[in-house]
Image 1 (spheres, one colour):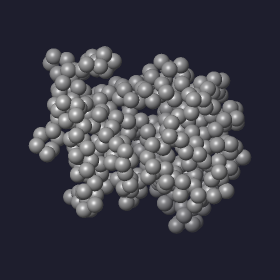
Image 2 (cartoon, one colour; image 1 turned 90 degrees about the vertical axis):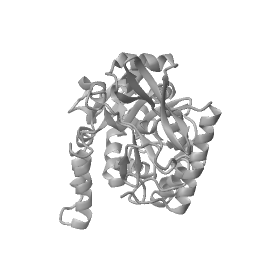
Image 3 (spheres, rainbow, N blue to C red; image 1 turned 30 degrees about the horizontal axis):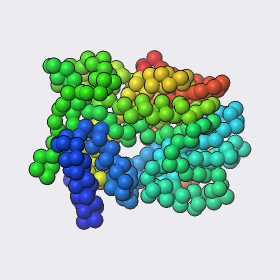
Length: 381
């Protein structure tokens, strides 16, 4: 039984529904699902990420790895410290959530004597930006002047760009393969509700991608052109350094496996994963798994070098997660057990360890990262 929304939340969702209905009417009665997803998540003052409801943690809709334990950010800091030292560059985090990852990365970089001059956060949500500012001010007041918030990417950047669960939240096209070829599935209004409707694919790039996959009639899945665009944009602003992306997903052959014929699109509401993306618009996160083969091709096309691709478990263990856990005394059960349980979830193949992947792109002369030395998965791309 799903928890019902509060009266205020329900009223907010109704405002989002009205906005989506207006978008459909303005477009002539139909919008692509990518259009729907972008509006439901990012419409100013209305979308899931643009409004004020709690998203992260026990009171929200999902929990990300940095929220589970500070060891994630500390391990990431150890992984990227050599790149910061090589480039003399900075850190740029994309969509920093509660600010937890930024605090943990900065704290560990300080302990390693590898602090960057600036830690920038690109955040489109004013609400989340305020939460991040509060987190940094509360937990790292002496480093607060190093943290800066951006609304657009800088023209030039050197150092490390971090994206934790960013690609999965980008709007995806929803494709239906039929006997006569692939079609794009969009959204129309049916009474006061929303309904699916297929139309011919008019975007040549999207049509070429869908036809190249040559999937069986009846297959439904996503193509994420926005992820390709983001990677290309990041490549353009990166002068020298590393782009590190952490997300859940697969290589192409596994992503479009015959058994995954209903795709990966999900709505997340109060720690429940739902198949219905029309459930209380504005109150649900909408996500799709990442096609890392497509991400790798986008990076190569943008002039980036693939610096590593492996499972989250391999990356964190290679980068020193276990050593950091060992710094917590097992005799202090109150401190050790929550950390140990979180580590188990992060690295277990049955939990997040194998589903989550880490992909890195480099530009310029960057030494290989130790975190990718064992467990390379590039052959799966």
